[in-house]
Image (cartoon, rainbow, N blue to C red; front, side, top):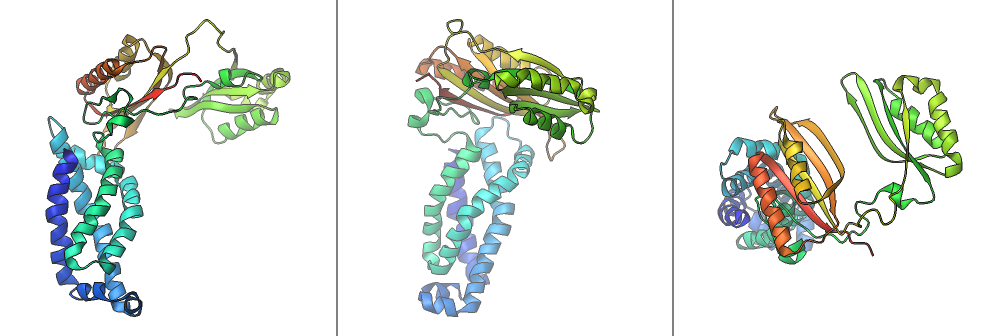
Length: 366
């Protein structure tokens, strides 16, 4: 609905006024240039420069400062129960770089062709054809409500910024401890006063003794640098590597601790056959992670991986971001999918989240 409203208003009215009326007056020879043959166009330097000026005005002035603000505001007005236009524009500011790069990849060459070859009356129909492709891209990036039913697990979707998509990735949510059965595995946890070079030093010691770092999280918190790392190593080299970590004098301030990791025992757990990837963004406040993880637990799902972080938006607001990967040992039918989407939609409203994006993935073992 948002894209229908936006397309009717913007493509049918605003862009007609710009591409035909305004550009027709600013570049009075544009229609004559479009009617020329290709050989004549190549010789017409002034005409080619005017095409370049039209593309520049359209892509570097019109789209960044008119089109995208109008798109984000239209989406906010149509989709939100309590529209906040300033928040919509703030979201655009955060997405601006990615949006413009995606735009220019399609629209710069398309509009160069449009302004070079299309007569004035055909400019809008040509733009409409390109817009069909662009709208699919933009909706998948920023819309959240334009999804084909055949691509949705269970065929259900609700919520303005809630996506459910089926992905055929059978290796998703696999732990390297379970995958690399011929290697020894251990975790490294460490913390110490931050200084340049910790990551380089630790990863070099691991590599020199045959270790391979897979999953890791390293972050500065205040004056301390915190490390959590998984290392896979040939069994015969495990003790030597752990000893090297313990005896390295340069690494002493990190207070390194190692713990052996073992694979799950066959028969003591149920193979997952469904997975969820959840990405949420909202104003930072206590209880968001607790509420989301409780909702996952109530569905009988296991959290395989979760990360959280705080980011400062360009509007100065603290944004709390959660990325979570969960698995379920039971397959959901259409009713189960619908129930899950409704629950997560309510959670989005209850927690006042800006975005909650959910991807349903079939991960049943081959």
